[in-house]
Image (cartoon, rainbow, N blue to C red; front, top):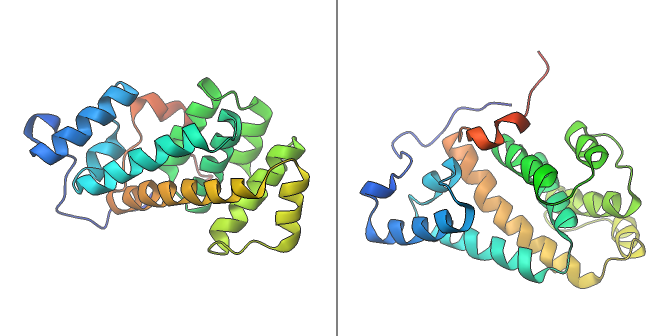
Length: 192
């Protein structure tokens, strides 16, 4: 669902006119992903926001112990619950092209249908509960998560992922960030 930006005066930062602090973070971001996503150009208006996002994102990817597929499920669940069409599109593309999320799992997540993989369904359910309850999941959801083979420490890495997604999802809401062409095939569509 498209929403209007509520930040009216800030504009995406162009690396050519960035302040030294902005440029330093943008250079790192561009080196990491190979291009300047619209989200990053917006977030860097406050360099600490983009820097914190990149740091937390990197740590979640490298330290969580979750597979790339599982990581993507967490990011997609949080982005959808938060209503972030930009991150839903971006993580759908990453899920499909880079993280190995099975097509039927990605389709189920995007459509809000039952996920045909018990382990990923338990991970998705816990992540959704963590967002909707501000970190207070129901005991049965947490029990199902652990029964699916996850460890309690994974809950803390989900908290890290949710912090990262709060930075990106809320920034995208503030700017009504336009989906980059590289993610366009995965744009969220709403029924008329």
